[in-house]
Length: 235
Image 1 (cartoon, one colour):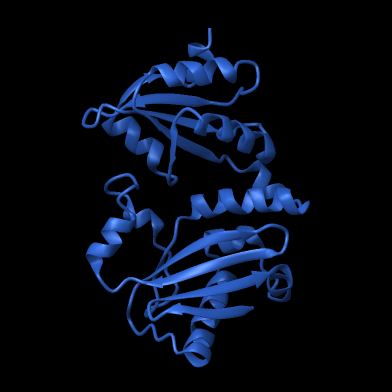
Image 2 (cartoon, rainbow, N blue to C red):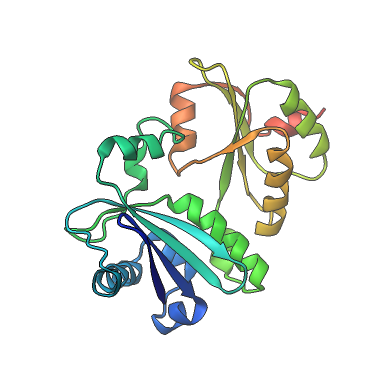
């Protein structure tokens, strides 16, 4: 484990696979904040305090994950001292769902982290490194794409005809009038789903989501078609 101080409010923690193996910790547990993950994060904070003078006290933390090819993963830990700054950083998330991103790490440390977003990164990282975890590949992952017009969705549907067979639904937001496409991994492999998402990013903007995003869309947005939206639009 390597800890570097970026600024008074931010540090960078580099973890390789030997660090995880020594703690009997999997990438999946790291993403979802298991008890062993909490112990690891607490160790990071204690070492950051003693080694680089990164004092947390009762300040909330935000954690972001960055893959390092096959070598491991970087965690950027940022102190969020201003609540307005936290609101700004999460402005791209679905309104009213910030609680979904909080994981309790003890009474004095509460990092805010998107498990779904990290899991996507970890899934790609495992594919790149040749390491397999069956539980990652079998999880019902999904991604959300935003479109300002319907035409790009139709074009994407045509490109993915015969390639993507997963469940997906199209919604329209009554306030910004944008279209939101929720695409599920379904029975595709992580590698296949990643390629499908890469195609969709050429036509729309991939936005961050959490496990409650689709339920929010169902309640607050207009559902235009589903659960085979792209397949229906490609006909």
